[in-house]
Amino acid sequence: MSLLPDCVCPVDGTRVRTSLAWCCPVCKGPLDLDYHPTPTPLKSLAGRVNSLWRYAECLPIGSPTLSLGEGRTPLVPLEGAVSAKLDFLQPTLSFKDRGAVLLAELALRLGPDRVVADSTGNAGTAVAAYCARAGLPTTVFVPAGTSGKKLEQIRAHGARVAEVDGDRAAAADAARGAADEAGTFYASHVYNPYFLHGTKTYVHELWEDLGGRLPEVLVLPVGNGTLLLGAALALRELHGAGLIGRIPTLYAVQAEAVSPIAAAWRAGARDLGEPVQASATLAEGIAIARPPRARQILSVVREFGGDVLTVTEAEIGAAQRDLAGRGLYVEPTGVACWAAVAGSERWGARRVVVPLCGAGVRGAFAGAPAASPGAGPA
Image (cartoon, rainbow, N blue to C red):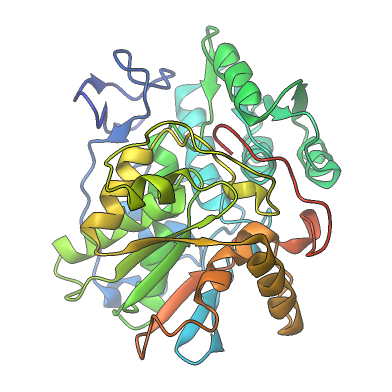
């Protein structure tokens, strides 16, 4: 097994060797990686493999043994200076493939007896697919009432589905209980920092496709914040290497119905306060009432000069219908950023990029009954 970087707790600084341990042994919180790579110059990328592995110098796992061609999704104009990166065109139809491939590669190196994950759909599907490719037996814990189409795809990849009575938090608790069993790898897209180093390739691709530049503004959906936090990693890497001068402003978007990050931001807090009132929302993928990395999410928005925006259910529905009318069929969670951007004068002449990060074929269409709000990692 090649040398893997150590993990470190962002709260108390505890160091943990990369292993089957899935959280900080002191505070039980998520871990980060002690890993600070230097990206290669733009000209060195020519002729490389057409997947996210083309950025190998920036990935904590070298010499990949499995890939489904993840990454390298197109950037298309939407309206005016706003463009969309079509991350729903990933192998399992969501941006979660970027991180799942890193988790599966890590699991292969650690050699567990089994893999467990928890999800309301997209993350579980991605983990199931990549673990199938790796030949790793996998169980995905899901809350009762999870979309039948998502469960169908998870099972199709050979994973066992464990439906848990209760909400999203109950499914997460069940997965963590299983993760503590000997020989188990917890493929958590929230707690495991390798996932974030997969999602950061979203920004590396934008930088490459725009000829070594980045847009003035990146608008990203936030439930657990894995795409936002990955984007911040990439921006620090590219800027630290002198490959970009101006750093984009980062905006986070939440569904107004479940918006704990927005509530903390408006209060000027550096972490979550008392639980906020949550309502039903179409954007189930970002309906996270207590994101474990909330402190980091708020810190990143401050660091990159942004703001936390919210969108209503009516705005989500209108944005989904609008994108469908433009030929892009995206799930409600995936349209949240377009809902926040479309028609707004906030951006002026600045170039803005939003991700369309989940395919509509697995989620609700505007006007369908809304999902129940989550209370834990999605």
